[in-house]
Structure formats: structure tokens, C-alpha cells
Image 1 (cartoon, helix red, strand yellow):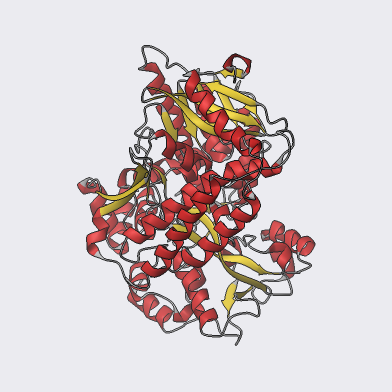
Image 2: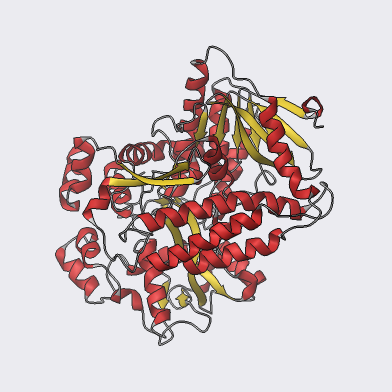
Amino acid sequence: MLDISEIQIIEHDVIVVGAGGAGLSAAIECSSQGLSTGLVCKSLLGKAHTVMAEGGVAAALGNVDNRDHWKVHFRDTMRGGKFLNVWRMAELHAKQAPVRVRELEEWGAVFDRTKKGLINQRNFGGHRYPRLAHVGDRTGLEIIRTLQDHGIHQGIEVYMECTGLDLLQDGDRTSGMVAMWRETGQFVIFKAGAVILATGGGGKGWKVTSNSWEYSGDGHAMAYEAGAELMDMEFTQFHPTGMVWPPSVHGTLVTEGVRGEGGILVNSEGQRFMFDNIPERFASETADTEEEAARWLAGDKDARRPPELLTRDVVARAIRKEVKAGRGSPHGGAFLDIASQRNAEDIKKKLPSMYHQFKVLAELDITTDSMEVGPTLHYMMGGIRVDADTQMSRVPGLFACGECSGGMHGANRLGGNSLSDLLVFGKLAGVGAAQYLQGISTPPKVMDDQAKAVIRNATNILNRESGQNPYLLHEELEENMQSNVGIVRTAELLSAGIAKLESLKKSYKKVKAKGSSQYNPGWHEALALRNLIITAESVARAALLREESRGAHTRLDFPGEQDEWLHYNVVIYKGDDGKMVVGKIEREKPSPELERIANLSIEELEKEVAGEG
């Protein structure tokens, strides 16, 4: 008989689950609001996917091109997201990103500088002006270093190598979380009036991914099980430049900064193929003049902004097109060449991490050789549906920020917007949690029966005499998602993918991890697998429902954007019968002012912004 009194209990006003940039930002804000704050991280502090964001943080500082403005950034974000973004989130992000970047600078972030001593900014895909504040190609690392150095002095309690299993509720209110210490296998109950999920994405459901082992959709699944809604899950971003060879770096991200610094994409015939893949509408909307648009479409290699910096969905599909046409690299990708465009010293100075990483791990010298790259599952635009201003889900006391929340990026995320997203919405989640807790008259209680059920579900995996191997089930899941829910989709493929997921769900009920609870990676794998399957199923079912191609979601059987679908978000939640429910809801209408800004021509907007200056 399980005695709940023997389980470790830790109490805080709020717990933040995930210690990347979003989680740290949220925890810092909670603590500054006077809340007792616990920060729970699955791995070690500092081992966050924020570190992988190398190219820069997007913010309309206007340091390199003074025409930049929050309105232009907002317009770029909406157009990059194919107008499916939550309007209010895109507005808050564009307005507050410069403030958050300057705050980082005040806290000690060491950005690269212009000759005038201002924070330097570089070009990136989908951004009209040089907008990404950067630290070489180590921007995410510098942001994590800065947030950690600042955060550890704010009275935040950090619980490392601790995996969240499921949320606890008092009625419909959030009351805490059951977790497990990875080292010992012992359970712990976190009691808290508010929980902020900042757990990242679920890319480990795919075979080729830039994500590491932590990205198993834990926040998505825990929120789903607690009654929250997931939205926009069909929009999975395949970063166009992940390494496809050699095997030692398979799936590893090659920052967009390589293309921002002049790198070009060529096929096996030596052709710079992106000039053949510029959407005509994009050229006319993005170019400064009709003459420049015409130069782009004519393949003028001296055009001001190279087509390699088109949005990620466009570049990823272009690489796939070359491979399908038999013009791919030997291992099924394309060649990314910066060696012919910049001298060796410039490359080492501007892209030090890229240079050293591939020199050591792949024995590849990017100052002399091209990289073989192709699309790799990188980021999820979809996530937990939250209120734009407070970041609270429909479950009282449950908040989400960063990649595990949905709405900000619409159908496709612009590079660099993820770092400013986590800074802006991490802080807003902290503010929202503080406001929520101030409005509570009686603190929620932890229900013993709930906690016992979570613990039993976890230990059943160890107590079965025999069962399915979690590693083999995970491999089946990866193969299924890669083949059937990949970069291009059809109803036939998606239906096959969902059928396989139903089979995997049945197999998972019999999953078995051998050994004891201590130091047991097989058990950890099995626990993460539940979350991966929930996240993967939500992507597949949402993708089947959305019968159009928009942004990162490409349906070969429904090519092109359909105006009807612009009015809907796909939402997923757990039904009363325990089955996944998928449906579409009408989107909130924008304010007339935001709609006006988004639909202005760039010439009109630049004139308006200049008049304000």
C-alpha cells in the first residue's frame, strides 16, 4: 500500500517547469514579484535548447538600419506566420522585444557591437532589416548565461535532474505537480498555487531532428492531461539546414547565421537553386522596389537580400525539391557553401561555434569545404493555448511560455523570434502568475488519490514481469512520424500515421523497463514515451484536419492557402471519454489598427514610421 506521507513534499507559491530562456525569465519575474519560486529542470541548469539558438535575438532596435520599428517587426512576423498568428501576441512581442534585449544588456549580456558601440544586428530569414542582436553564433548561450547569472541571486530554488510526471488539481484549479528525481527514482510532490510550463517542444518524436533527449513534449502532454487545449499543432518547423552528413552530426543545426553572413545553397550541379524558388508574391512584398523584385526573380546574384534568407518553410521545400529531382547532395541534402563567399578569418570570427563544432565532431573545415544540409525537425509553432496578456491556459493557475505555448508564431516562425519570444512571454507569464495568485482567497489542496495514481502509473512500468521495449517503441514512433507526418503530407500518409499511433498507444500500455528505479534510463525513456505519443498524435490529427497548405504545413492533396482556413485555429483537447478531440475554432478578430499595419505596403509603412520619428 502506497503511503503518501512518505513522499517528499516541497511547497512554493509557484513552480516553473523548464529552465531554458522562457523558464528562467518567468522564474526571475515571479521572484521579483515576491513569490516563493521553484525552478524544476529535467537536466542540469544550463543544458537548455535556448543554447542552440545561435544566430541572434530578433528585436527592432534599429541600430544597423534606423528604419526598423516595432510595426515593421510586427508586419514581418504576421506575414511570416501567414497571418495565422494571434494578433495580440505578435503585437506584444514586437513592442516589448527591444526592452527585454536592453534589459539583458543591463544584466551583463555581452553583445557584438557596431562601430558606434551599439548592439550589432544581422540579417535573418523573413526579417526586412538587420534585426538580430547577436554574440557571434553563440547568442542563445550568452542569453542563458546572463539569465542564470542574474537569476541565481533572486532567491529562486532550483531542482535539477527532476522530471515532471503529471499536474495535480483541486477541482479545476492547479495545485502542483508530481515529479521524480532522475538519479534515485524517488518521487516528489511540488505543492504550488500556480505552475508555469516552459518545457519546450517534442521533436524527439521524429527521426531527423535538431532536438536533444529532453524534448519529449512533456509540457504539451501534462497540460493536455490536465484539461488544457493545444492549438496549431500541425505547424512543425523543419529547419532547412540541419547536417545530413557525416553521421556524427546527423540532424545538428547549422545556424541561419551562416546564410546571414553570406552562405549560399547549391545543388549537385553547382547551381544556386534558391533563385528558382522565390515565391512571386514574396518578392513583390519584400523587395524595396519593383526593380529589385524583378532582379530577384531574374536570378540577379547581386540583389540586396539573398533568397537563401527566405522563410524557413520556403527554403526547406526548395532543398527537398532538388533532392527529389535528383540534384541533391550524395546523402540526400544540398550543399551550404560559405567558404567561397567569405575568407577564413571572417568565418572564424563571425561563426566560431560552427567552425569549431564541425571541425571537432565531423572533421569538416567550413572555411574550405561545403556542408551537406537538409531539413531537420527543429521547432513547434503549436502548443498550449494561452491568453496573450497573462499566458494562462484555460486551466486556472496553469501557465505556459516559450516553445510549449502556441499562438505567437502562427503557421511559421521567423528565425530569431524564438529568443525574443521567450524573453517577452516568460516575463508576462511571471506577471500573470503573480496576478492570479493575488486573486486567490484560499490556496488549492493536493489530493492524495491523484498523487497516488500518478505514482502508480509510473511504477507499473517497472513492476510488469514482461512487456514492450520502450526503446524499440520510440524507434517505431520516430520512423512513423518521419515517414507519415513529415515535411510534406497527404490524407493517405496522415491516416496511416494515425493508425500506427493507435497501435503504438496499445503497445505502450504494456511497456516494461527492466531493473530498479535507480539510475534507470529505460524507465525514463518509457515515461517520456507517453508524452511523445500524445504530442505526435496531436500533430498528426491537426494536420489531417487542416485541408490547405500554409507556412510549415504542406498538404500535397490541398496545395496553396485557402482563405476559409485563415479564419480558424485547430484546437485539440482530451474528451470526457479519454480520447483526443480535434476541432476548429474561429480566430479572434484583430483590432482595426493592427490589421491596418499588417496590410500596409512596405513603402507606406516606412513612410509612416519615418513620420513618427
